[in-house]
Amino acid sequence: MMSKIGVLAVQGAFIEHEHMLRSLGADTVEIREAKDLAGIDGIVLPGGESTVQGKLLRSLGMFEKIRDMIRSGLPALGTCAGLILLSQGAVNDPSEYLGTLPVKVRRNAYGRQSGSFETRGKLVGEPFTMTFIRAPYIESVGEGVHVLARVDGKIVAAQYGHQLGLAFHPELGTDPRVHEMFLSWCG
Ligand code: GLN
Image 1 (spheres, helix red, strand yellow):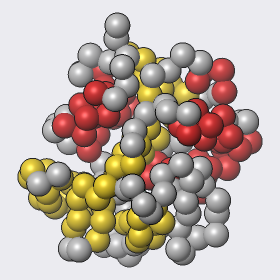
Image 2: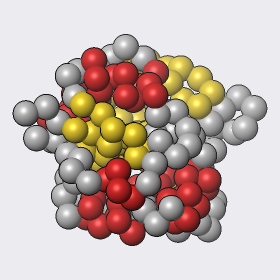
Image 3: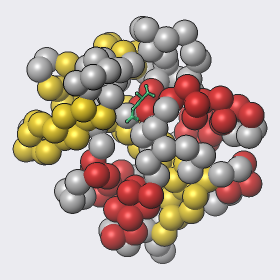
């Protein structure tokens, strides 16, 4: 059976995730309201603006629902703002996020002007082109979190069980390995 992946589509860069997932044979559904969450095998939280996304999730009545589904085992992939949403909060922002991924992040960690760049890093030891757009990085990780990538010593990718949080944007490139890893958890 084809996996049905929910892509949060309230704000931000969700189309690119859909294209990548579909190119790998998954079915996608845009999550715009709580009823769209029914029957999904995994969820993608895209880049965009984490404060806006968090507010929209609350006002649309999806915040607790998504949090509970991930806690109960729904695989989740969060990129950039999506990583912030999964996190236990940012050291430089008082907002409360889902907190299912036990990491603390720093928002807009690379400065506002020169905050966008591409670099050839290593993801789980393998070369990977990483695109950063006003990205956060991970300041600290809790127990059981696996660090998958660092750039200049800062953590930019982490895995905790069935959750994957990335500071960069694998959906903007052509390298499918991140989405393949995520889909392998989605049944
Ligand atoms: N700067 C955004 C935030 O803090 C994240 C940027 C992105 O998702 N590309 O929410």
